[in-house]
Image (tube, rainbow, N blue to C red; front, side):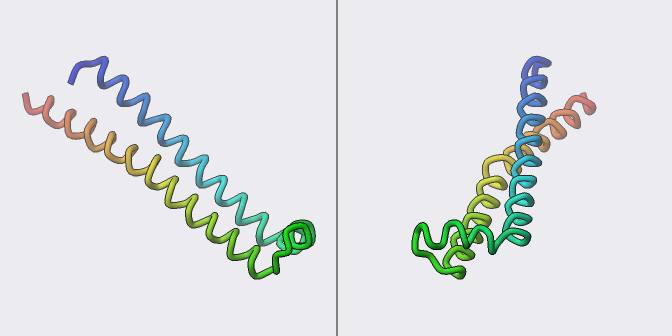
Length: 96
């Protein structure tokens, strides 16, 4: 692996790591909104769309699950793969 490729991998890895952290912060903020202001969300959106409190909860928890899967799939797993490649290349270069 050339030094330029290594620099690019490290930069992409750093970007993916920050995206992963920010994605989970988004999930925690969403969970906090649900727990702290769930009734306010229902009072605003329930009558507007004709949804019950249970339906709004189901929609929100589905959003949480889909967002978590997307954050893990598109940010964490590629970051982990890049870290494994960089670590493996470091080990190969030390052996030479």
